[in-house]
Structures are given as C-alpha cells and as structure tokens.
Amino acid sequence: MTKAAIEITDLNFSIENLSILENINMTIEQGDFAGLVGPNGGGKTSLIKLILGLYKPQSGKISIFGEPVKSQRKAIGYVPQYANFNNDFPISVQDTVLQGRLGVSSCFGRYCREDKVIAQKVMQETEVFDLAQRSIQSLSGGQMQRVLVARALAAEPEIMLLDEPTANIDQRAEKDIFDIFKAINERMTILIISHDIAFVSDYINKVFCLNKTLVCHDSTPVTSDTIHKLYGGHVSEVHHHH
Amino acid sequence: MLEFFNTLATQSFLQNALLGGILASIGCGLTGSFVVVNRIGYMAGGIAHSVLGGMGIAYYLGLNPFAGALVAALLAAIIIGVIKLKWQHQEDTTIGAIWAVGMAIGIIFISKSDGYNTNLMSFLFGNILIISDEQLFIMLLLDIITIIFVAIFYKQLVAISFDIEFAIVRAINVNLFYLLLLCLIAITVVLLIQVVGLILVIALLTLPAAIAKQYVHSIGMMMLLASVLGMIFTSTGLFVSYEPDLPAGATIILVAGIAYFISSLAKSFIRFK
Image (cartoon, rainbow over all chains, first blue to last red; front, side, top):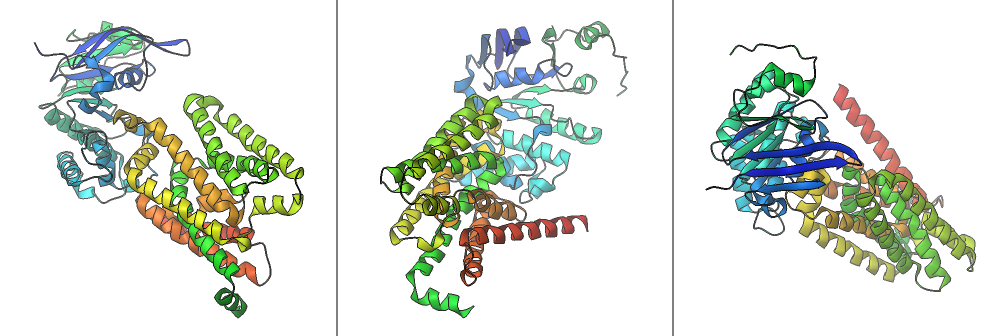
C-alpha cells in the first residue's frame, strides 16, 4: 500500500489562546488534486503553514509520506499568497525561480548549471521563460503568479501547496493557470486553497471545506446545506454553466 | 582647489582619509544593500548607536575604542536579532532601549575619562583626517571578511531577504543567517564610525544602496553600484570639506543626501512622464 501524501490526525492549533483549527483529520493521497475552501479567517492559510512546518500545532500529528514534515521539506513546493508579496525587491525572474533550488541543489556557493537547466525547464512549463531576465517589479499579477509557481516547481517537489494562487488575476488568466496545474498534477499531488468553490470544482478530485473544523471532506457532495454551514446564512446560490 | 591635490600627493593623512573612505564604501555597499531591501534601518541604527557603550568602556579602561566598538556592535546585533526573532511585537521598543542605553553607558564612561569633549565628538561624528595605517589595515580586514561571507552565502542572504517563509520551507536556517546578517551590519558600522561617526553611519549605510536600488535589478549589482557611489560620496565630501575646513563626515553625508534627493526626483519624473 502506498503511503498518503499528507495525513493529518487530531490536529488542534491556536494562536495566543485563540483557537484557529479544531480537531482536523484529513488524508490526501498521492496524485490527488485537492481543494481547500472556506471563508476568510476560517484557517485555510494556517493549515497550509502547519503542513509546511511554519507553525507548530498544539496537538495532533501531520505526516508527509508517513514522515515528519521537517525531514520531508525537499518533497514540498510552496506557492505563497501573492498579496503579501514584496514586489519592490530588485531581483530578476530567473533569480526568483532559482530560489526554488535552495535546499535541494547539490551545489555549494552559487547556483550551478544543473540548477539553471531546471529553472529554465519550469519557466517554460509555466510560460514565463521569455521574461527570465526581466525584473519582477515590471510583471503583471498573472505573470508574477506564474513566476511563484515556477519557483515552487524548481525544487522538483512531489507535493505542491498553493495558497490562493489566482486571487489577484482575471478569470481568463485563472483558467490558464489551472490548466498548468492540471498538467503538473500528472506527476505530483496538489493541495490548493481557493475562494472560488465553483471554479475549482472542475479541476479537483477532492474538496475540504474548512471553517475552524472540517465541515466537509473527501468526496462528500457539496450541497447548499454544506455551504450554509461553511459560510453562514448569507450565501445565495449561483449556478455556473460550463 | 589645487591645494587639496597638492596635499594629497604629499601628505599621508589625506591619502589615508581617501583610502579610508574607499574601504568604508565597500562595506557599506555590501551590507547597506541588505539593510535597504530588508527595511531594517532602525535595527542598524540601534546597533550603531549602542556601539558608544563599548567605545566608552574601552576608552575608560585604556583599551582601543574600536575593539570596544566591535564587541559592543556584535553584542547589540545578537541581542537585537534574538528579540526580533523571538518577541516580534516588542521589537521597536526594545531596539529603542538598546539604542539609548548603549549611548548612556558610553557617555558615562567617557565623562569619567580625560579629554571628554574631543573624543566624544570624534566618536559621534567621526574624524576621517586622523585615520592611522593600523586602522586602514583593520578596515581592509573587515572588508575582506564581509566580501568572503557575502560571496559564499549570497543566495541564502538574498532568499531570507526576499521571502523568509519560502526560505524556511526550502530548509534554510533563517535564524542563523538573520543573526549573521546583523553581525555583518555590526562589522560595517564599526568600519564606518571612523569616517562619519556613529550618528551619521545610517545615512552612509542606506543612502548609496537606496540610490542603487532605483536603477538595478539584482542585489549583486546593487552592492556594486552602492559601493561605487559610496566611494564617490566620501571622496567628494572630503574634497569639498577640505579647503573651507568643514567637518568631513557631515559634508560626506550632505553630498550623499543631495544625491539621493536628486536621484529620487529624477526617477519619479521619469516614471510620471
């Protein structure tokens, strides 16, 4: 039997006595394209940061391929929320993507040839290769988002964690990026945070709805009752026709 | 005007001053770039000012004040670094406290020593015209340490400055590198004290790098440009101050400040055109 990519058991997390996550149990199998949805402040980003080992849980266990997170960092690629980004930083697209090689590269000192070859490959995959020498200050939101995806891919991870990767871009660009994710999913497990439950449902094979606790999980059909539990009473149903 | 160049050709004190400015500029270009992109000018200020404590104690004990400065700077860097990493929400109060307490200790010890005024003034505002050969040698050594460190750990330092969470995820020991970066700032502060004094250090540490940032797209280029700009500012300041007998440190800072002002204006003019 293959080990689960991410397994979380009885997880509780709070910041200064304010409970953020309660009693989380979830399993993401290898090859899954899982979506994590829920209201703002529902703990989505905290959960991703717990999986990454950036936060420590009060209780419970998180394993990546059956091992503790710290020993599995090489296996994880991370795309942070674009909104918190320092766009003013003097750095080129290529140098940003190369940062993904840190901790996995076998080269000491500067980035070596192997790192650059891999960076070029992932920049082609995310369609930012033409921008390689450009400064990140000059990029549009959609372009920057792809650069951040390329940076995560440069580590050649087995699991990708993405925090609202399409929050700041228009719907057409959003679809293009999701098509890239779909291609990536052929070779790795993906967990993605999204605000747009209807949109991601076309791509994902598993959904987790989070509002402090898991309101729904796995392949439970998402009904208006679940949405009600997740967001409270003020959601009107919008039917998407595809 | 010729007098400056005549003196430069014959007098070693002016040669040392020019060389001191150039050596200080290398350190300030390298470290200043990280101070600017990390927006930690206030932390660097805390380190710079608390150095007076070390200088004062060393001076009182009859030791070399710059050895005292180096010890105090490194100590302040580590204390400030640990506070930043462990108790983030009290960061600015604590840095302010270290800043002021360091200076207070310095002033008390210097007041109990001979030559209170002249020495205090040269610590606070620098005296580029009395740099000894030995000090030049120490400055060169500190530059070499800085260059080697930055050359080896360039990609890690850039990564923690750009996106510290991503750096953690990529298994970089960010706490260690953050502390080392602050120690690097401490070394640079000591380098700069003789040139412009500890009060004006922050300007020379940040202004050349801030100007450079407006024109380049990598930290490496920023360091190079900032170092060259620093050399231009220190040399120009020295030259301008020489004949009217103005304080060299203050003149250097004024030159750097005017250049920053003009550069920012020009840059925003180009952007809005």
